[in-house]
Length: 104
Image (cartoon, rainbow, N blue to C red; front, side, top):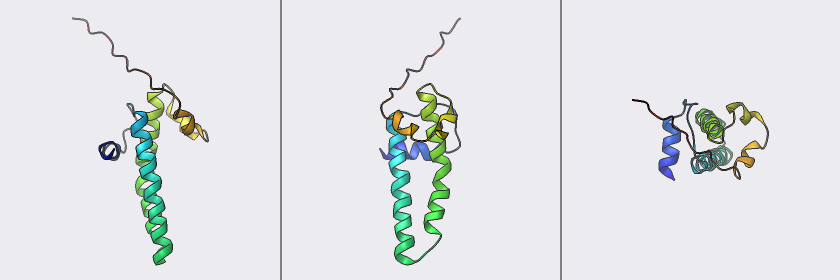
């Protein structure tokens, strides 16, 4: 699971390609756990920047993995703008990647 999160963080600006269902939901949980914990630190210690910094640092990798997940199910990346569509992806199987035959 941690390798999937690390993979998503290293491809934080890669909006091409595919992300598996497990990779997407692992990063989804990681994103919300980190922002929740950072928000708790803000509230407990009286800071005002930890939660905002965590959100800003992770929003671009989250959008990239969401777009790659849309590509994996055969949809355009613009579908991430549709509210609650990510939950529909939970039930949507991945499409197998088709590789074109090589001619020699």
